[in-house]
Length: 198
View 1 (cartoon, one colour):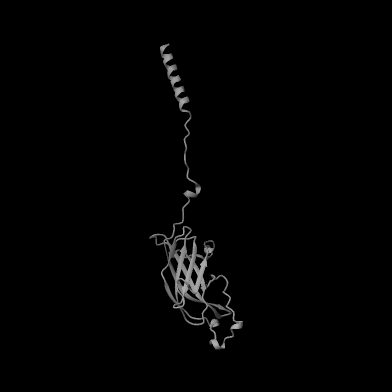
View 2: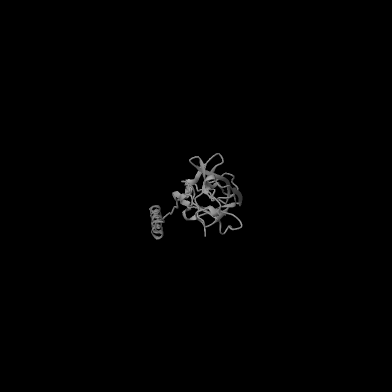
């Protein structure tokens, strides 16, 4: 009888403890699906190559420009990476032009950058054809710039390049030119627009 009363007392104490503490809720945090997906590394540097290029129309050289390829790297990793950012290329001729006021200014928004994407044996890269019409040899300084969503900007080294006028863009001497009917050549399709600053 005493043993039964002792067991009853222990059960009663246990019930009192449960009632006093209540039910404890165990919270388990699970990572979101987006957080476990692999992220593209953020680029920290770029390498840009530029070569003179002339487009033809009907077998005749018509448009002078540059073929530009940009590679982006994250840290010390030698493998180029994909990027989603605003890309800008500037080209200027001294002494009239400067980095702050270039004769050639080319912009590609982040939303459109994927249309220039290429992948080859080297890795991920972005290719641009940049028009630069000239009627005389043009020594240029060219630089690429990438602006990330965070606001950080990456710049390439300055590249020196000399463009020669295409056959179709060579003009007569000024005294023989009728400027009243002169029109700027229409850039070829699929080229990167050039916005000249005042």
